[in-house]
Length: 95
Image 1 (tube, one colour):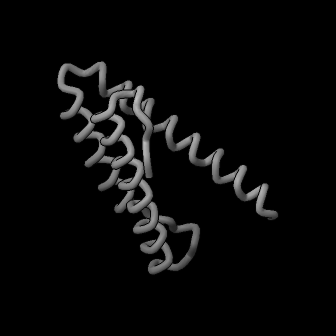
Image 2 (tube, helix red, strand yellow):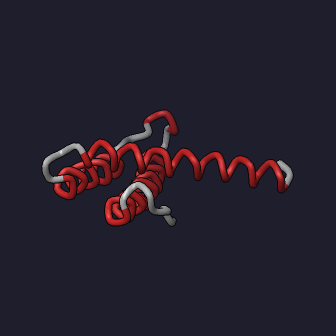
């Protein structure tokens, strides 16, 4: 993959991350206690990602590594969502 293709792919991924975070924030904003709703979702998603198994890789330690990487990625996205909750949807998310 050349540099231009890599940049385009990275920006498409970034756009999806921002979209997912904004959609989650919009969903939580409809709750009477948006912060509590977001925190409940955040905790559940991070915990669930850490428990995820990847039996298709055929190696339990590699499955654990995948789960840990997934949990880190979900935690980063949830932090982006938390920032969006603080800024409101008009703000700019950062990684």
